[in-house]
Length: 229
Image (cartoon, rainbow, N blue to C red; front, side, top):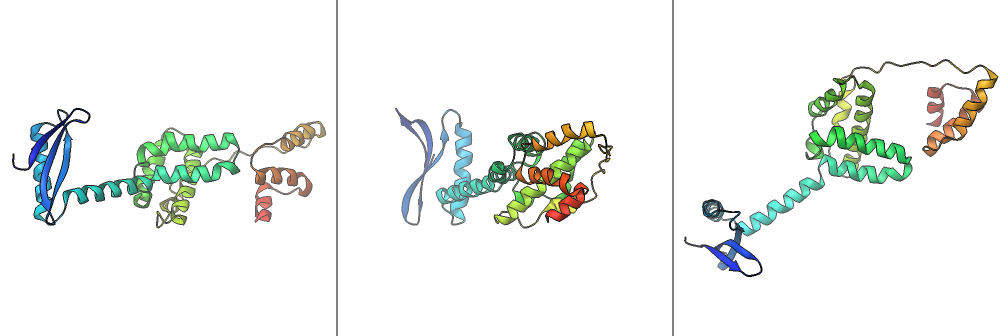
């Protein structure tokens, strides 16, 4: 086998190697460990390397370029970007909310879209994932997951790993959430426990401030949210 040989080492074991010349220099290329890589597989890898040489490419440099590309794709994957976004936001959330967000990503989104580059995910792909939640009757959860994904895509845009937010194209694509209205507390004896519960809320700072402000201004939650902005 011209150029192909088996290198035997007491420490490293048995390695298939290819000896070749490129740019006037003699070089070696690792083709795998024997017996995990058979002679036939080693020959196939040798032939692939020879094709690169015939096209003026160094097999070692090509392998390094592919490795860098793979690492970059993993760094820019939806899962990688989402976990980075989660770490950035976690200090501002309650532990329970942080756990809920990452659990929804890990159980619902990552299995389907996690390995894809965040810049290549399309609106139909995201919708197909959300449809899986809808089919189980968890309409509100589907909307919450969409909101999480929208924030991940925006973070991807801000960090130059995505160009646009496909989640924005799904407005109106999910089934609407049925709103349940609760009767207002009007009896004095029921008001005190409500106020104590609001005062004891341990969630995010914005919500805590809103809960403490609400009894003083007597407006609807939606109007309070507008006032906040």
